[in-house]
Length: 386
Ligand code: PMP
Ligand code: GLN
Image (cartoon, rainbow, N blue to C red; front, side, top):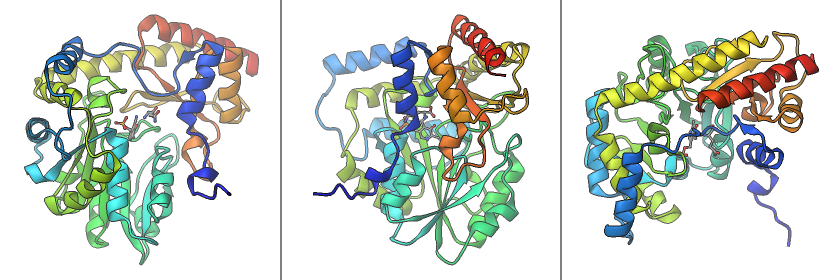
């Protein structure tokens, strides 16, 4: 029997590949984005307590009502977003929220616009849902989204735009003008928007996260996706939220019933408590990550690298061409993990037909000693590979 499936022709995700190589070579893993800290002890204790003394049976499919209320209150308090209980579904990570949304809202042949470089799950999920991908390419180092580029990608079959803000892997946080331009195009062309905002709390230098749901004309056309994994530095927990108008959420809640049905109840209990933490906790969290970003950026610059600005998420990018490294990003990543003990992610992995072949992403959510050691190894790599 031939294994003729859409997924059979697709590559192994770059995150699995690079983390596998990191394990194999005992390398510092700055590839896949996760912190090396264990995550807030208070939440881990709450989850443990809920495993021991709470329910370990199926929670309601749409999620524990306590967590759904906590999501509503969190976004109301910190982002001024107004959601109804029927406008929130708890999923197994943002990944499942994305899958459920695409399965529910993409009809065969619908075009879906994405911004490339794009998170690697988008394209396979859109294709498997029967959609056709149209990519708008953002160019380094500014990675700016323009109304003209977006408008040019919209055609008669376009149904949806899938955006990611803050933007992984480019580490951009779209500004007010970019968000307004995006909203204008979506309203003018009557598009549904999937807004992957998993990095919403990880924004630096006083930047504001602007939820797309709150932009003019967007309340009834946006599915906002969040992830507790990113909010609390607990990436393995896979507790996600899909939020929006009840009419948009109802079909994806049905898809979610048949994907995972529900998400572990104990983790939901702990996440509900974390969402109620004061604004200052989230500010301290991003200030700490901002210091890690600055540290890595400074030591890499001292080692002769050129680092592109990181406005949000756990990542900063190296522009290999600028210091004269005439290496393709995938070759560079393979060599630094095998020969110098640092795993990174080539940005070309986030583009279907790569135009960006000289940029490499590094995760800085690591302790100072790890960052310093990684930078020292990367310095040696630069000198050897020049
Ligand atoms: N979207 C983006 C942009 C991401 O960076 C990630 C993971 N880092 C996800 C979705 C997946 O989130 P989760 O682990 O909650 O499934
Ligand atoms: N989102 C994480 C990153 O960008 C990885 C998630 C995954 O491994 N699928 O690094």
